[in-house]
Length: 288
Image (cartoon, rainbow, N blue to C red; front, side):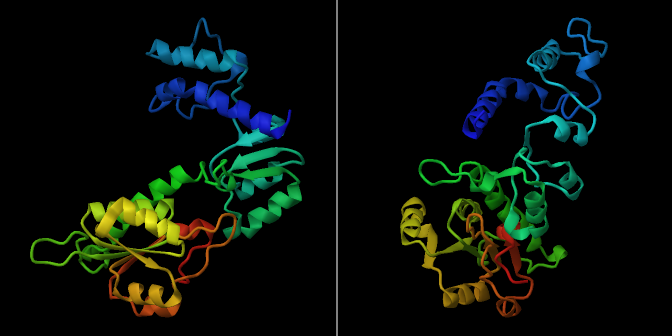
């Protein structure tokens, strides 16, 4: 089967099973590896389920040809295609074989040992984060970037608390007290969601980016609430110096993130200021 056909079939199955997956979430079957298909009777299930729908889901899985095994080695030894989320772990390197398709997040720019292991195994490795659509977008990376961007502000706000060693600054301030200055480096999906969250908390937000088209889009989307600045070395240094929270959201697809915030810049930051580097999967855009 051609790779494109195999991927299309996989996505079709995943979409078709969306209703069943929702039934499994939070149930006793979620992550269950304690029963095997060769001893499972859909008509007389020896285990109490408590919900007929869950038993139906279990039967559907097995009736469609699914097999449940007890260890990763058993899966890797027979599967032509491995679909997972986490990049390959060291314990999985020996399990990969020539011609086997691995479909997962890889983040190879920051993990040279993973790259070496994949090359040595001669498998076909496809990184979620580099899959593009017809418009050049990154449809498999975007949802993760949305989550990461929004969480960056939550985490940053916690780090600014005095008891955590921060400046003791509230992002939105209070009447009579200034709001925090938030700098977001990168105006992509992650950066946009970080900016949206920070503005929602009434912080003063600046986004640095090198794309004039992207800055125009952000300006049209958020208006005067958001400050957009063309990214240069001087601009990064200037805004890092005055920021209470700096969020790194730089992405170069398939490559290591550039180190835009140097160690010297960090030394000049306000005492107790916080930094959250979303780009860390690609090596990070902060030098330290």
